[in-house]
Amino acid sequence: MVTPEQSTIPARRVSALAGSCHPGPLVVVTALTAALAVTAGQEPGRCLLTTGAVLTGQLSIGWCNDAFDARRDLATGRRGKPVADGAIEAREVWTAAWAALALCVPLSFACGRAAGATHLTAVAAAWAYDLRLKATRWSWAPYAVSFAALPAFVTLGLPGRPWPAWWVLAAGALLGVGAHLGDVLPDIRGDLATGVRGWPQRLGPDRVRLLLPVPLVTASALLALGPAGPPGARQLAALAGAGLIAVAGTVLGRRRERAAFAAAVAVAVLDVALLLSGGGLGTGAS
Image: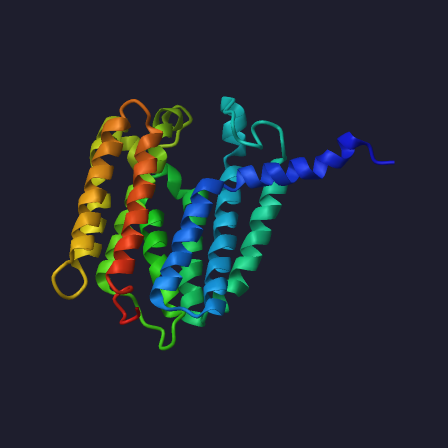
């Protein structure tokens, strides 16, 4: 007979796995990609494939990150992570990461060979960050590659396999750099204590707070001013809003460093709105 305590074990493991996948970034990136797919004019079935590929890729990345960091988290007594809290074992998280990656490959190529190769390049860059580049001066590069690859993944899945406009790719890369700075900012001191010396850690928290608005607002400017013709009132309003949010995140980040990352996410949402109001991804799609 199964006792109530035994019956809750699978549920606890599922909950622990969900907590290990970095659910916040996963939901944001997947939702933004789905919005890009609709903006580009993908058909509903292709939108589902695109979103599914990104979802499984993000799951694999999040689980890889937590599984790889498990020893460091345990050694430093870091709380709030399921492995460090003893809710699940690292080997189980590794298994989930590889399973998600195995699903991501066919889903990506189902969107086309060029699209699949582009998306898997983004996933590979993120895994390289988790496994090695996070602790080097090149820690920004995987973020830039992955964020620039997402709009390309979407447009390459369209008939004719068009690339997005250059300003979309550049804006994506800049958003990735901004997301990296905002994500790492709250953990810089702890990272330095455990020997993680990526680009933001080398800069230090004060410099990162000052630098953070630069790539975010530059990305917004590219998206507002990049499309042909003069920018409209909505584009200019979104650009002004992005600037205010980015600066507010920098100021509030002095007391609550998570505010900087929240500002980066808010600017990314505004940038999707800029794409929607700007007529697609620069490929002629609407």
